Image (cartoon, rainbow, N blue to C red; front, side):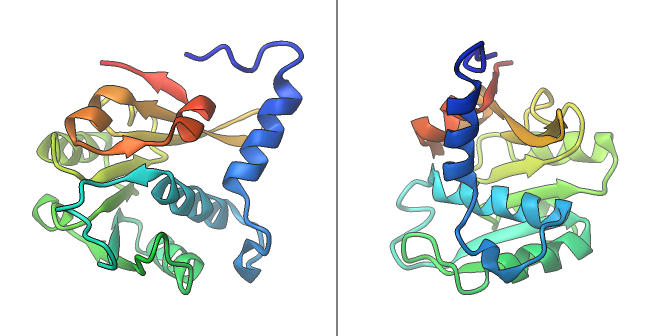
Length: 182
């Protein structure tokens, strides 16, 4: 775990987190927990690099939601008209692990812990950015887990899972994360 938020550095951390994870217009949405999660997912995508053969230039980036269909609608509204590095973002709902392999990003929510662990295991090594707000998701092999601490959304990153998938997270993103290793 990074001890980056020690005395005297907390204001710097808040400033960095704010500049990294907030957008100027908040995409015209009311701030809800779901819209904040959508913002985090969008920003994770901004600070993630996929292998060129997985996400060629100008190809659409496919963000999938497994479980919580209502969140998929929020995510779709949030990313509409906000491409990342020339990649339009398409949001899709998936119902199976097999369908999840075609995604660049997979957000898992509203499924059992056992179901989430199976999805993560099935995607082990695949270049699919797996995110969730489920407890122990990062420890179970998911790449990133959102959680609330002291009224703020924070995140954990599983370094081993990320490296085995050939995805690269920006050092700016990693500096704000709690790092998990298997």
